[in-house]
Length: 186
Image 1 (tube, rainbow, N blue to C red):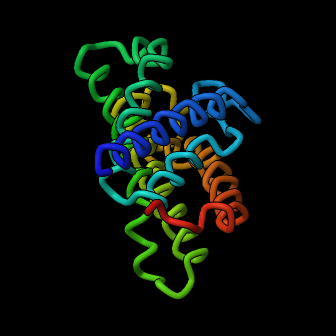
Image 2: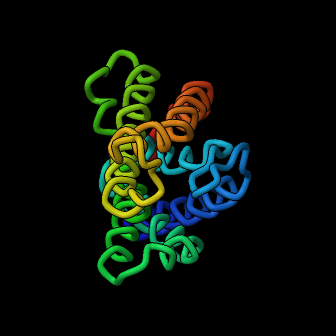
């Protein structure tokens, strides 16, 4: 029975990674130097975190981050040196997507209101992902900042222009879908 359960969860994780990948290709708005608003592309990662907890959420987010790295290799190669490429992979992909699997941690703070817990978790991990993009903007992509603007302010506003709407879209989608997701896997 235990093997069946693990196999079922692995299949569900794989399906959600596939759905997240497809959703990441549905671009609602794209920024000129990278970054886009999608059709709630990270929502499937939140679903796994919600249904199966931290371990499976982090595993799924990490795996999705590796896949997104391969799909975004053009962006990685634009980073220039080997050190900045590695930093790009870590901040823009691996860490940014892995953290999405930790959304379930916040659900425990609101045991009587799972919608609120999921919403807070979605916003919290979205903000951590935004922080990854912010750091990446400073450490890797700072050369794109206008000469009259501090790099940190440019990174904050540039990344915020697509990350904040992405967080809002994902959180609204999560809250609207929670009734269908509200049964935890046995």
